[in-house]
Image (cartoon, rainbow over all chains, first blue to last red; front, side, top):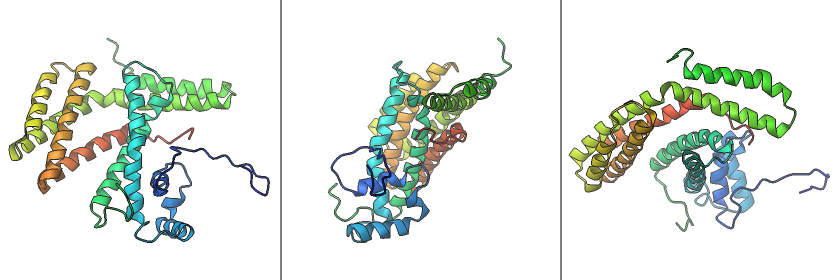
Amino acid sequence: MANSEGQTVVIDWEFARIGDPREDLGHYSQMPVLPNLYWADPAGFIARYRAGSGMTADQLNEDVVDYFMLLGEVRMIRQMIQAADSLANGRSRGVMAPYLINATSLLARKYVAVARRLDASPKQRPAGDPV
Amino acid sequence: MITQPTTDQIILDCCRELIDTVLPEITDQVARVRLAMVETTLRNAAVRSAHEIAWAHDEIAAILQFARRVHAAIPDQMLQADLLAYEGQHPAALHLDPVVRAYSAASRLLTTALRLTEASGNAALRHEGDLLVDRRLETEQTILAGWSPTGR
């Protein structure tokens, strides 16, 4: 993509598909690549997103982001575990598979922390979620 | 058997060689990133090699204790079946393969026990289960050895 100033920007899509846009926020909230604008200021990030999207506080808040993180990252963890399983069964898929075992550990830790935080929260199901 | 240097020392020495000698000679950027990933993976393997059998052995014992307490408080056929399945995998020796098989059986046991405690609302057992999960996460954290998402 090129903007009006002639800058070229590359977008690296991950899990591109039609879905609830809040899945993007859940996924982004756990991204370990800095800078992570969500974790720098979750409340401010959410306020700006709500202002831009028209979502209400019930439709988008920190619990909702946590909820979609849990919902979406199951897919990511499954992919990484499948890659590790391939390696364990003698099917090498290059260095990325053993390397990403670390990411599985890191993500599992975040996943448990978020699940516990959400479990302790009084509002566990976001407004408008079809699941 | 030559036991010193230990396996982790040998692997870490290979890591030093890769970074100090091999990496400076590589100019291709993709290859440099791949080498960094290999070196990180070897560092993780070094940590695992020094402790993984002991960690698995200790965690298996803790899971068994927990599962038996859960079974005593919440009798359940699936948990009983998992306990019996574990008995068939209990390692007679400390070679890695049987220990890993036993650890996998113990992990299935843990999953079943955690589901039961979650459904039962037994706060004490649930807390005990959480501590076991924490223990596993801490071990994983140790293996990470300062990992960062290079190449992402």
